[in-house]
Structure formats: structure tokens, C-alpha cells
Image (cartoon, rainbow, N blue to C red; front, side, top):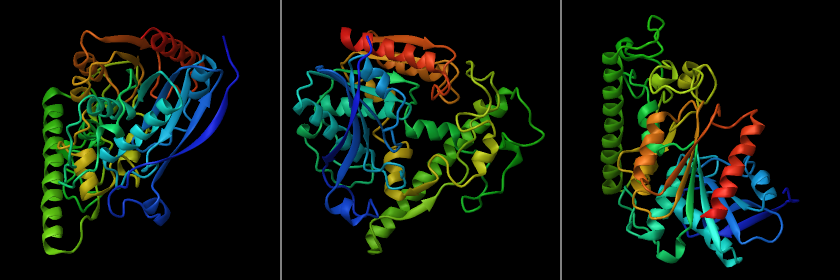
Length: 375
């Protein structure tokens, strides 16, 4: 039965964050996060959909779920639309503020909808809500975080779920970069976009690309650690900005036989992945030393499946089968992490955003609605 819905803008205070994490003095002195609560009739069941940095207040799930009697809070983090200074340990505090607000309003069951990059965030949050272990960031900065900041939820829904920001970037960073200061030069032996290289890629080439990607990620992390240590010991500051060029070069964007599903070429940012790769704004492009360590490096605490394995709540996973950046191997890792307490459904031929697929949006909302009521 469809119900009438209405929206409420919510403004929620959150604990202070890192020094100069925002250009807004107002935000720094009175830190808050903002969201949109879509409600219908009286219900005791609610869900939160949140991403570390994307603005989810226009999310496609809001009205459809609320019209089914599941109230939905689309919550934005303090880093909305700007992840250059993002610290994942702060984002779970922002999510916790939303969960706490819903509990205080009388919702008896609260679920996390981990859509896209929100999946690893949801797993990180719930793992820490069940057992708080973190006391600092990967940069060594202390956290003022306590169990009351992180009320546990009742279940997690994974939809088009990335493994986490670090894993995602590790698979997309361009292996052919020769010089971190040069946005153009490329090693043709590792360039998936070289004019002479056509799919299907041979196994040795893919292996070499993956090794070079790993080495590049490790080198950036080591440089960030060295630079941060020097800055702080020399007294020049507590952090520093830098640029990571060319971060949209996963071989799976070109060769559809790798980790095969129903996707089209090009990933999720348009069919010209090479143009995105060399463009001015893509994954992880603008960073600070501390944000790199927290969200993009292998030192991150926000690994998706690893955190999900530490939780005890039921899990629903929806695989969008034409997703350009969530692959069958991704689905398998999530499934293994929650073995024995996860239900899986395939949404075919769902693309990453269910763009122009209203029937699939209805299918997804029906499954979420039924699962949350039964959990």
C-alpha cells in the first residue's frame, strides 16, 4: 500500500573534527550535519542511507521506501561534496548522530542502507558500535569517541556495494603513471588506454598492472607518512594538501571478460573512461596527508568486508548485475564476510545508480521493505 510522504530537514550537532577540516568558520565552531528525513504514517521502523562524501538527500530510495511505511533519513556527512580532508573515523561519528536522533524519536528498529560507498561506511560503523576499538586515526591523531556516539543498528543492507574507498581506488588507480607530478606521461607497457592495446587483455598484462597499482598506492602512502612526520616535527603544520593524478583506470572498465557481469564499458562515470582518468576531478584526486591515510590507504580502518565480519547483525545484499564498478568478486567477498546471516538477490540488469530503471527501483524497495519488516 502506498502512503503519502513528507520531508523534514534535520540539522544535528556532531563532535568537533580535525583542525581546518572545513573552510567554514561556522562549521568549525558549531559542527553539524544535515539530512532529509522522509516520513509517512506512524512507524517504528527507519533506515539511514549515507555516503562518506556524496550528497544523498536526493537519493532514489527515499520516497519509494517511505511510501511503503519505512521512514528514511538521508544523512550527509560533514564532508559532503568535498572528500579532500575526509577522515573516516569522523564520518562514523556523523552517522552515529543520525542513529541517535532516530532512537530518540522512538524508532524501535533502525537499519543501515549501505549503497555504493556507503556500504563500507555502514560496516565500519556497525563494527565499532558493537565493539569500540579505535582511539586514534591512521595518522596517529587522537579521537574523542565513546560508545554513546555510536548506537548500534539492527541490520545492514548492501546495495551496489563497493568494498571500501581504499580497495576501490587500489583497483582504479592508473598503473602507467611515471611521475606523480606529471598528469600526462605514461608508461605504454602498463597503459590500459594505449591506442595499440585492445581487449581482451592477456593475463600477464593484467597481473603487471595490478602489481604496479599496488606499488603506486604503497609509494603514495609511504610518502604521505614521511611528509606528515617531517611537517609535524619541523613545526610547519599538522597536514598538507596534494594531488593524485589519474585514478580511473581499472582494466575491467575496458575488458568486460574480466570479472564478467552485464555491465557496459567505461565504469560508472560515462563511457569514455580515458577522458575521466585524465580529467580534473575523480576518485581521490584532491587529498591531505591525513585524509589519504584514513580513507584511501591500506592503513584505513574502513575496509568493508573485514568490518562486516566483525558484526553480528543480519545482512541483505542486492547485486546490481550491470554495475560498472561492483563486480561478482566484490559480491563474493561481502557474502563470505557475513556467511550464515546474509541473504543475496540479483537485480538484473541494474546499473550502479538504477538510472532510468524505475521498475528495478520498485523491485529493490520491495525487497528492502520485506526484509526490514521480517528482520
